[in-house]
Length: 438
Image (cartoon, rainbow, N blue to C red; front, side, top):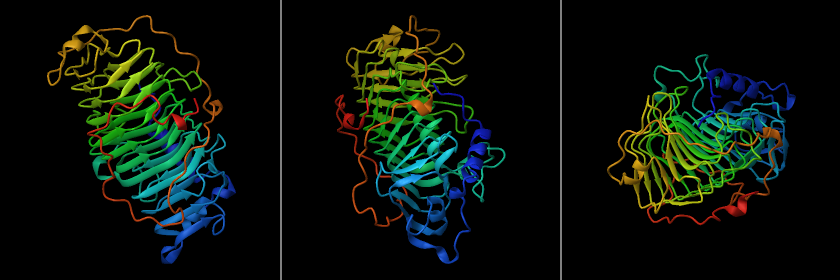
């Protein structure tokens, strides 16, 4: 289900573009000696966000007034917060030319209460792949010890990311982070993306993704990933859990997807999905040991859930518990290949979910299916043409960050706060609908 658009060279080019946009407003002076200022206001203390990052101390706050900022920002100091004073009014604009709006490469970075739009790669990217100078090494994603290099602690909160060439909000090679109460649309790969981490300890909660090729995408992000209380509706594909050899840590495994609305992913006002996916709620390709529980999965015209293999990586031991399926063409379908058949899929309390093949219906948890392969979906409706990412309809106003916006926050904790999920019901179809532009 994942577009093949993440080679190392792409990120190298993106970082070069982020640091060398050719726009004088994006150039930064040398970092100040003596530690910098605790709070730097833009534009009162520094004309650009980039200049403010150069002037702020580690652990400090860059506070940005309303305005449009045509720059590419690299946050390379630990525990720095970039915070807009007006979520809709503070706009980091790539103008369809710059690669990344805000790139966080330091532990403890926060991005809050602003909009990032019209970048060729990503609106906001948090990435642990870089050298001591903040550049991506020539070998890109490959490393002899990738587990030793993951960025630690991050947060993206109350951020709007629209009309970006591949990703809206993207966390890569990073642990112990949260993407919360944010909105993404117009992503030609995905609105939200979590990739390449073991023991990720990540929370994705309270977000809205619509009018993307994929609402939320996970590739090789495993261990302690909680995806809850989100609205992934009105995309081409709602959510994917995938194994991908272009990134480290194959296979993807061990996510809890609970209490989300994953519906009506039949939106033509969206960029085309690279593999042609359309009308799919959840796509699992080589994903393993994931729990899909108490979600509303409806109105997806190809399948509520589509299980497949990823090259030679099978989908294994995925559990579907107490979900509500409604008005999907088929609720759960498995089209794994004979090269990598799925096994261990099991169902518990999902009502009268329709399945393909019928063997899935008898796979009651904890026992799962035997090997499944060679099944095909037939007469699937054709996907409509895609819309260029810059032309996708913009959202309406989004809710801002609560509290004293001028206060310098304490450093992020070692692990993100995790919403309680044990008693969550299946959400109503209106979950976060007030933030939707559909």
